[in-house]
Image (cartoon, rainbow over all chains, first blue to last red; front, side, top):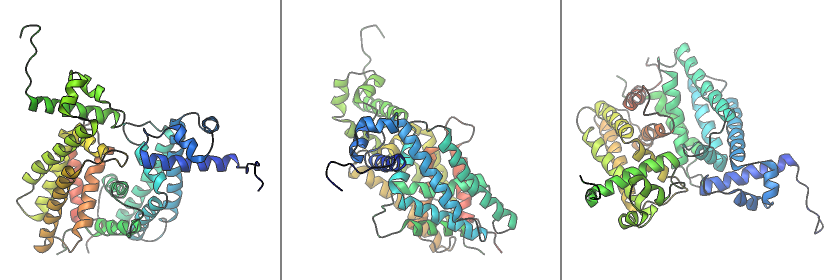
Amino acid sequence: MSVGIRPEVSPANRETQILAAAAREFAAKGYDASSMQDIANAVGISKATLYHYFKSKEELSNRLSNRTIEDMFGYVVHHSTSGSARTRLTNFMTAHARFFEENHAAFLSMILIRNPAAVDRGPDASLWRDRYEAHLRALLREGVRSGEFRGIDPVVTGRAILSCLNWMVRWFNPGGTQRAEDVARNYADLFLRGLEERS
Amino acid sequence: MSVGIRPEVSPANRETQILAAAAREFAAKGYDASSMQDIANAVGISKATLYHYFKSKEELSNRLSNRTIEDMFGYVVHHSTSGSARTRLTNFMTAHARFFEENHAAFLSMILIRNPAAVDRGPDASLWRDRYEAHLRALLREGVRSGEFRGIDPVVTGRAILSCLNWMVRWFNPGGTQRAEDVARNYADLFLRGLEERS
């Protein structure tokens, strides 16, 4: 390509580039400390061009959260729709962990942006998060109905499972020797079998 | 007390006042968005006086984290030293949740300050956190040794338990009708008994 001719980037691809760069900024520096100028610099566009795509940092971060939870929902549901309740639960947890590890900056941003000190993301991300939790609860209820699981509360249980998976943002290092899905598999075994020795 | 005479506040009490005010600021606005001026205003002292106690926001937040984890360690260990492994684990979890609810702003601050985007708190808080995790792991190992618990990995299990408890900062409302320790008791039952129906 000759010097002086800018390669064309479609608006959809440019938006994806911006979201990826914003995710890296938020993950590295936190939401408050990341400016629109930092994000524009990371993409290699002017701040004016960035504002053409997103009229504020809030709008950008909302779009990032919404897209991340929507992508995660599609990915995790796809991997946890067939098999026994035990298999589906294990696959739900390992798929969640794989998505987290493979989309680490976006996932971390989504969690940071949920920070009580940060912005309200509006109804879209909440809707997807509700659907995500509803999928897990339905899976648990089905296990109770089929007799695989004891009569647990699907709300309490779903929350405990998601807590373990989400808290991984605080300690799991995606560059390390351990894979996130192996951690999730250990957690699944713990939730399924419990601590107490069976008599 | 007559007008014009300032009530005397001992340095130790003043420090406690400052830490409580800082905790409320951090919990409400986040670490980055809280300034030393905001904290001084909340206590009703000058910024110069505040800097007499803490030479930076980092030093103040380190002291707050250290004191919170140290107090929590004392409280939770006190409540989980006697009884069967099942009882000790349940008491550990409910005491943790009570401490969290009763010291909500300080606990939330401690978690926010652990934010990867925030400061490194130095060795003290890490030391107390390590002791806290070590206490939980020892409790779990003892349950395995006595035959009450199956041969689980105390590192994985301890992490799962603390994840559930710590993630409560993200959704639990201390002003609501539900008590944090009741949530913790439900989680304890789940971890002890597991999901699978026993045959």
